[in-house]
Length: 273
Image (tube, rainbow, N blue to C red; front, top):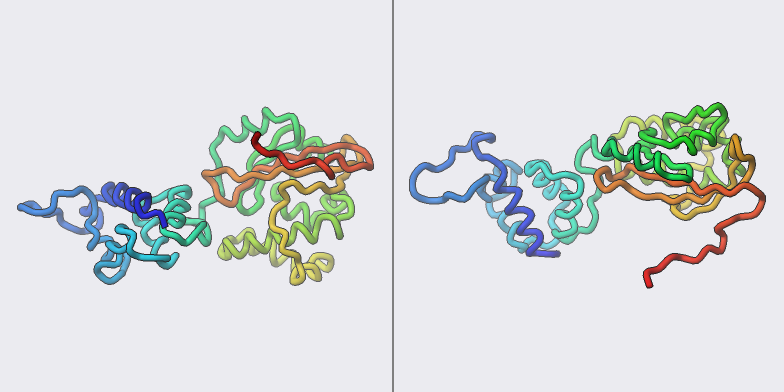
């Protein structure tokens, strides 16, 4: 727990909430003149016993429940980065899930310009693997440049995806399915992810792999075989990152080398000197 950072974050954001907007009257006589909601009003609005929020703001509430922190974050209109900071400062680690259903569904428009400026294949998907942005190099990977609308569905269920992803049944599907499982665990109410799960369980090839899927939940640094529509067979190494404003969204940069030999099998890890 980082008591000072927690207190500063909560006091600053609490001061921005106007009590009148929640039906409270601001005292007009002598007494409290501090801006924003009182600690007692926060307890009322979050349906907690008096003194609960005071304990949190003062740092006297070790490992508070995630649902209480979520109620505070929603009341104080925190963004996703502030929500993450709140959970970390309060001592529970990273948030158990996104703050709102829309989290991870959009990224700043400059991301299109960013991927356009990359030499390697690059694309951005939202938290449901819906394609948000991509560059021309990525489009070259597909016949006639037809990019998929959902990259998870393409990787697991599309016949073109299975033919493009060489050794699909061993090198791709068993490693991609755990990503979908992990996303569903974090976003169980996501309708797109729910539909993907139904399609996976209805497919005779992916259904047997669903339950025994290994615990591999991200592709960062993986090198796998791929049949490029323009450049032929080769190996692609994936560099994965997450836009900080959109938890669950992902930037994927694909470094492709044609040929039968892996290019990055023994590439050393980079370290600061």
